Image (cartoon, rainbow, N blue to C red; front, top):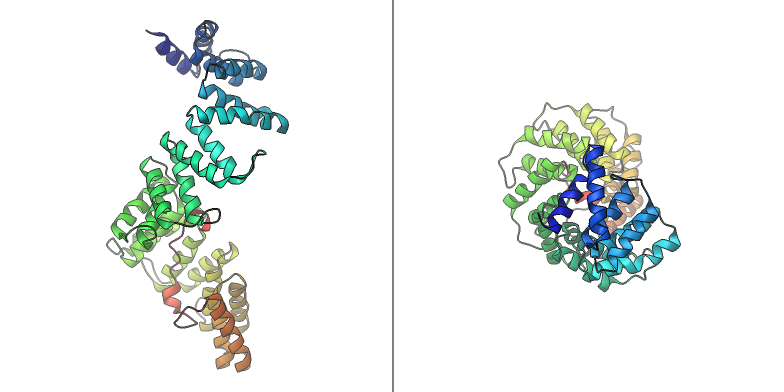
Length: 385
């Protein structure tokens, strides 16, 4: 067995559950490291850092990493950086930036990712440099780091630090997803569904939503449920829609609660139950949903699932409007325009309609959109995007 193979085998044995195997692996690596084998030096540094087969000694780990880094080991230079981030002071972390840069220059993928993110955020004392951040993320992606592709996708998608590009965002998300980066699956599905950066392809959207749902992404579960409910890109199936909405709710997706409530209200895939619908919407409202507030308000107007109560309806419409939902102002305008539960007041109605129009940024069409149409929230990215 050659030297490199010995190092690889011993490095694996360092993590053995058997103490005797770990100690034997450490002795083998220490001997190779003393003879000048760079990879063994890195492994010995790791042994001291983690306490594998020997005592835990951060100073000794730092010394072995430094010796390997001086022999142009990108892995060692990166471990020096990571060691200071975990154990060092602010001053030591900033001093260790040179090792992060060195590791990235030597082609270490994780180092390129960390350096790119630091340049984009201006962290660790690095001056914010968007172009440099993009350059390092691309280099990390070429090294096989899927998270780097995803980071570029978010950068182009949000359009806060660079000019927004749906096309670039889509291709970056797709590359991350093809590399097996599960958080990207839902983003690819959203792009195919909405045509943002690529042609609309509902069947492909379903494929990627399913992958995200299997991974356990609640946003993907909610989006897949929507397509099952509407029969878009897949055969309509209310029961499966409800199943995926429930999974989304369990995962903390607010829109899952909104859509599950809609299924209860309309009797889609489950028995009609307006009381349960209002409960779902109130749960979503407590978690920040604006449209859920409007839905609760309409049920107070109609007396579905709750007693008819115009003052409670007015309260919920105002709450939805305060959270940025134009329908909240629109329904308030309708109440004052028609004298529903309040004294008729055209001036106040027009003011609420004006606020709704401003919130919609002058979009054409009805100020108050159809309640049935809007009981379908999404598609959404993860983290409410």
